[in-house]
Image 1 (cartoon, helix red, strand yellow):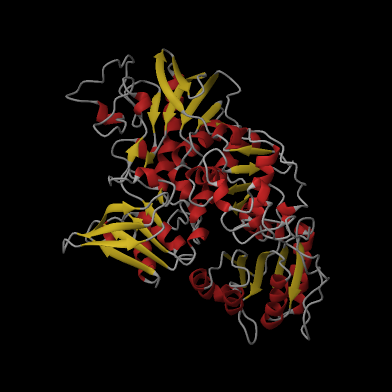
Image 2 (tube, rainbow, N blue to C red):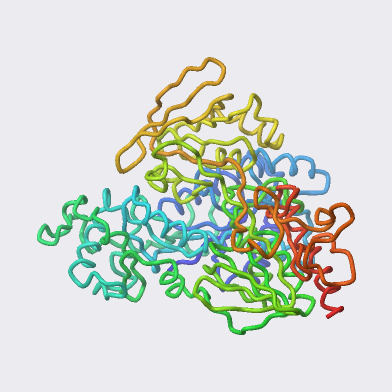
Length: 628
């Protein structure tokens, strides 16, 4: 497999050689280094790399070059390699242009010349950018393949599970992909039970062929030779792209593989294939978790600190708790990152001027937590809590129990269900709650409708606008600015294929097995319009998941947890409060149980707020533990 390319461009030969030397010294084991002395020659080389399906991880261009500036080069290179990290090399006097380029050319970083010593001024920046790139890079495919139907709720659940746990997979739609039908035929022939052996070849077989709906990307092509000014860069002939084992033909009719409809009945799809040739038919989340290496059972029965919820607040509490010596466990029902982890782009989080995705934030936080020894159970759910002083005992969904001296509840919130007749049967079959980023590519050329007027809806609209023909945001209020950050309102206004409809709400849905149309009511005129669409994404309301705490911890009328001063009524402490002190700021009605993030009554629904609250709780945890 050819290594991804680091491409550097500078018209000064001495600077270019120095860049090449420093890049090779640090990254030659994982990447190929290419160079060009002008923007024009660089674009020629990049086109060849694209045509040969090579991967480019980094473009590092000098700003001041004749004929074509670094910003102009990066802008023109963006369509060729949109996922490549872009770094601008500038002199101190050009920093204003570099800052403007963060928006105009989507530059990820700018470096000042000189960059000596590289160990301090070059490598840390590039290490971070390349780690981000590698997190989403899909080399020639050798991993999990999911065969299913786009409109199958079970297929969606599997894809969403794998995506949110950042497990690379290849999606094969049985409606459009002959290889999907061939694999489904193999599964039917070789066994319908979970854990069957598919009897297909390993990574060099059909799995290596990335179909149009695949997440895989192939990397092959140019060698390490510099791009030459006088002509195209020297490149070695790349290996031919792997072909499907089925040769593009439909699967045998005897097995039903030639008819996509034959694979629609329940119990057949989805089928998840693994690199060793084995497969699972309609796997549960627990079965998937086991196969991809996630942990669902605790190593111990007791921990100093247990955190229920792995969103920003929970992860922050875990990082601070474990880094200060507490044996820490996170219990997360879905995937680390929480609701924020599904966000396509967070642009107002401190320290990330170019923004970052929720998945990136979750990945960084999980890595940081695990570095300090945090144990993470996912998918695993807390289903009950009891108090046996000084212990707090949590019952998990598999019937097991874990105990602790201090508990942080950071379970966040869920989107509220849309109260429209018949919508439940279309959920995950055209109707989705949250961003459902796995569906974005499938929406190419379609009209997509979003319900909601807060940041989550705005971020999703910007992401879906890259793929959909048109994105329509339905807002019940009379202004988008009332619930959405100004930067998102401005971006939406500047995106031509996004339409905002104010005082609009969904009153009906239509479709058989999948969504086909929605009814949209205009509050101003009273008119109801039926609009055809295959995709409706809902971002409304906030419902806490706190039923498992009923009868133990005090909640408000909506289920949010009360904490701190909210617990004191008419000067009286909550019933059962048996310690000689006032509740700490983020402490619930039971001593030693703390609340952080969106699940807390009166919280500010922002990622940074959740991170701050999660961090603060650890200080109170230490004070609580000191008094035991």
